[in-house]
Amino acid sequence: MSLDLTGLMVAQVTPFGVGGAGVDLDWLPAHIAWLDGQGVSSILTLGTNGEGPSVGLAERRRVVEAVAAQRDALGGGLGVVAGAGCLALPDTIRAANEALDAGADAVALLPSHFYDNTDAAGQVHYFSSVIEALPAQARVLLYNIPPRTKMDIADEVVLALLELFGEQVIGIKDSCGDVARTQRYIDATADVESFVVLAGADHVHAELYAAGCGGGVSGMANAIPALAIAIQSTFRRGGDAGRAQRQLNAVKDMVQSFQPVGALKSLIGITSGLPVPHCRPPNRDLSPQESAAFEEAIGRFLAGAPA
Image (cartoon, rainbow, N blue to C red; front, side, top):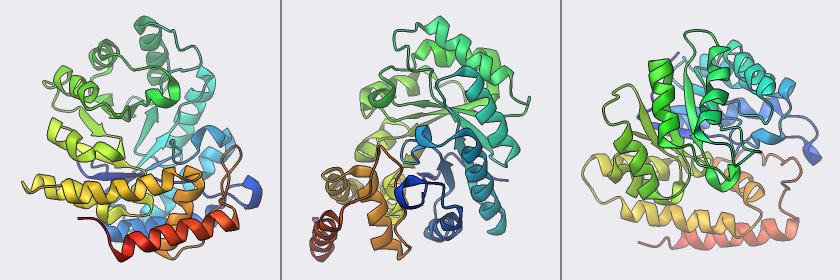
């Protein structure tokens, strides 16, 4: 199994049946094969774009099994990271262990976020309780996304976990969207060679790579992986990644102007040719009228993408 945090990780969507009833596991292999062919390095399943909080514990394991099985069928080159953050500590421990048993290379952990006034000591205790309940060789990616959790994983929490667990804590996906805040993670962990800070906010990937992020995680790469990879590779060649970033942002803005999860899934259908997967409530599919308007907007963009 391979997990390269320096490449581009896709925060993969989760396909559901009509009305959100059940996970459409049969849809996953073709999408993963398409992403692999586009050059992504790994898959993050059951994250924010993956509607992870809407997926039940038993379903989570089946999703990870399906993703890992397709990874293996493609030769094992893709890394697999499974989102395991739940509100209840026992559920997080179960989700993380089952994801690892199902073939994930690592698990991504959110802070315990309902009690958003928890202090650093409480968060260290929470993360430690999870990691101590995992196999000794288990690898953990911290997941900071304050727009959703309403709390930030403090630098002191990251450093305490590195002190306690060392190379088990492999990095942090920072999706706060504030480059200055991500820079603080980079500066705080600069001496820890095994720890990677990942660009987690699509709209500022180019700035985050310039700040020192060692790799990236992209939700938009579900549908436009080549463009997300172009931002990363152009920056690393010493070129100007601004044009690719502006193009990605233009598409992201269109997605955000509709129901975002439904629009992203519709975009996958447009760009990959795969059937459009359904959402699970409270997210929803685009209506026929919205789908037509979205496809028209994407068509106009493709006919004359901005420089």
